[in-house]
Image (spheres, helix red, strand yellow):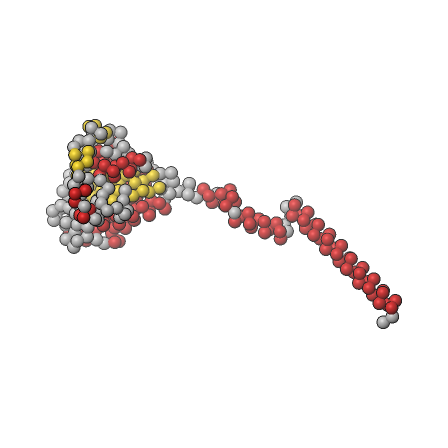
Length: 295
């Protein structure tokens, strides 16, 4: 190829490069302008996906309101698993008297057990944990008075104080009874109107009764258990003024005795994990009904 031919080829190539560069620059400027103006470019799509994945976008889209929309959002529930599996190792501590307003009463007791050795304290903790899981899913803040993490107790006055200091909307103390064979069924214990010493339950009697009635109805419906045939005259409800956990409470509170662990038929229920799950559901349903203002 001649020198002039080579020079012509170079000039042609340079012109072509310049033309391509100009076109590319124009496309980039246009793309940038379309991005700024909200056009549907790849860059904008990437920005939109990033924004959608951000916490701010989740909140603005309403996803952050999911918890607030749960039925028990903003409610505080305290579950009080009766007794403690290692109370028997601390007899001096649990026999110490505490002031319950109407009298002095032992800090705590060991509770009862089935003939097979399944302890009431094991039962109450298991059911309370199950009920807690259900209530948390409904949006409630749930506290346990003990979670198997204490050497003994807590004492009955401290159990009441935990609910009071949590400003609980509802407190349920979970128990199982230890009565004679043939005595069967569950019952709910509600506070009497006590105004003596450090105890004053007058403000909580009415709401505690509503809690107790709701708990009775839903526990029976979920478990199929009948109200006690030996306490409460067949109503499944009992009012007492001698329980420190009730006397010292300033928030709505009840006890539930879920069955008689000394009766073989009731013992078969409390030792059955599937039945305990139904018991927990019944307790959670009763608390939910009370907090939602229905029976």
